[in-house]
Length: 456
Image (tube, rainbow, N blue to C red; front, top):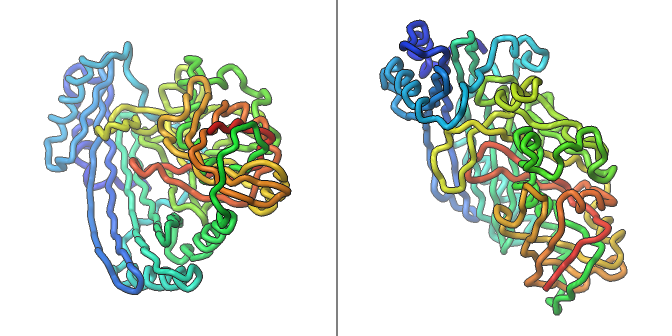
């Protein structure tokens, strides 16, 4: 929608009178409202309601500078001037590009799903849904359930000197359940779409772990990877598909456009997550635009094993002579610092599902292992080479049936080689947001792999 966010009106006015030497300016606001309630068994636990608005202001002369602030009453002209001053300390050689109005003339920009303002539901509505959902899970699980249910509304607005003035509001409901050592997560665009089925199905898969612990047997095995194990690879591996890494050669996939890189079973897409996306029911992370004001769109990265393209922001697109794919985000820093530097980020990074159940994959594995947990996902994978070494736990499979759990293992290999050896992808999948940033998701199905090296 074209109506300017209240928090940006002063910046829109200030852009009519830019400071000397300022050639372009941009202000982006991100407002997050969150309501949450917790159920412990049948008892209501802690409830909370919060609101936070952040402003990211850029100004360009010969280079581009940034100011981050939560001071909504700050003088807009002064903030723009400070951003311009900060540009003098930039290590870049030229100014960063800013979105132009022609991006909003494209078909993917014509999406009215984000134009209506969103409001928080009442705490009673959220409590009633949480109580119902927790009760359904306890009846199915046969034990006490701890459930946290939340609603998050993110309103994003942007104005710049290229006549960009856009606002979008998106809503997400998320449930986190814990019971008897199990932890599950589900999210949706509407409260009605949140159901117990994903949790019940995920919880039922624990039957494959109902076997004794046995001695570890290192070796090279046919292997089934759980959806969670695949996601723990994707949480880092998505970086291999950014155009910046492709251009610098800092990904093993560089130079392989339109070439076969993975098994025929592997198709990878980055979904915008709106109501026009095939993931609209199962995922509540939805984006009209990125933080540079470029419209979001569904993007195919790998199709039937063939590399089709890269995720771009405006800077990488300008360097490659193409248009941005709407994948600009804030630089992800594990140190917990404020994210102000522009980077390339996914939205809903997804390996498409197949039709085989987890039970069928384990049966077809015949003699091998079922890797149901892996760890240290932020340090176990080198995105430059694709090499990985994940600590993990696995179930030994013989004659298509689980016979024992092996602990203290490490799975090693290379992402490209692993995905090239995939024989089947399953229908089982979970969705994981990157919790530290709560801004994007990864989702991959369980899969059967021809060979995987396991050491003890």
